[in-house]
Image (cartoon, rainbow, N blue to C red):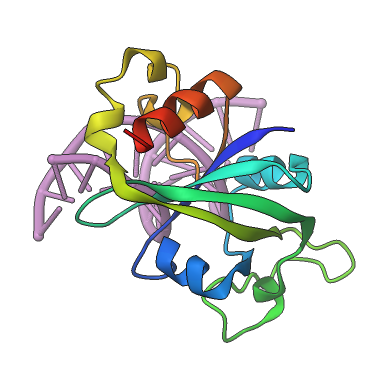
Length: 151
DNA sequence: GCCAACGTTGGC
DNA sequence: GCCAACGTTGGC
């Protein structure tokens, strides 16, 4: 049982979109390190839903990994923004996972607040130059974040 | 819109 | 394998 943090631009796919859909493919990851984290996920793992590239970046809620990694169909679709003409059909480069909506936090936990919490100093998200869209979270960090979200 | 940081590409 | 050029991410 592991914990993760997944980034999405809310203008593309937000916590509200997931709340409505309940289960969704988490697709569009086009970075090898992030993909490797996707492939390491197990069903039942829990993840934070992070809103990036928006007026108020921060953690918006939680979700559960519902299905382990499988090929992301977008890589083979020329009309998809995630199309990758160099991905071999017999050995797809890019995977996605299915996620199930967990909860939406009563209020978003802003990035600026996360930075002020000493217990989160090691959070991968907060490291200088961190741009990964999929990253691990420790059990202790997870606990700290959920506690912050419910106060 | 700016810019720092990082990843990828491709020539050599 | 090196590395410059370019593209992308993402906070501000």
